[in-house]
Image 1: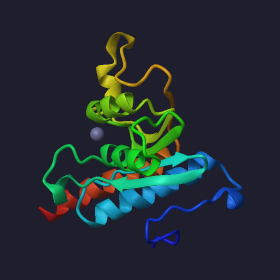
Image 2: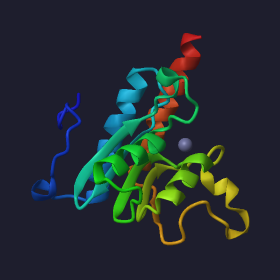
Image 3: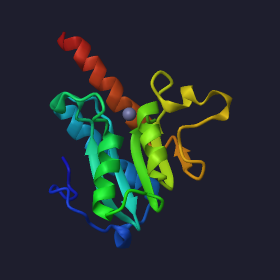
Length: 168
Ligand SMILES: [Zn+2]
């Protein structure tokens, strides 16, 4: 199913990029989400891009690691910092299929990431519900874009939970 880079190694796509870059990188995050779904993890995927290159890819691993903090964004932040050799991600963009939860938004705030792009909103568990009064866990300079491939990002979640209910 995945045609790009099955090793997960870094690659540059700049020369081939013809469409909307946000959609391209969100598709990469969706591929990660699918991988998670196949492993019976909640299908949320993330990639972090720096200088047009994907430097981190991750999907949820809470089941495999028995770790409630092993969300795609947390794993991607750690892996991107390792790739860059520095803890701050100011020049980076995170693409994640679903609105980050408050825990991940806090971690992203600490990372000072430059930009966050997410697909589907999550009114129940997303970070925006803790932003009452305009106080956000994100860094004040972080730019946020949402709704990129929103339907696909939402559908993969809906299908996953529908199948889960059916299996029970
Ligand atoms: Zn999270």
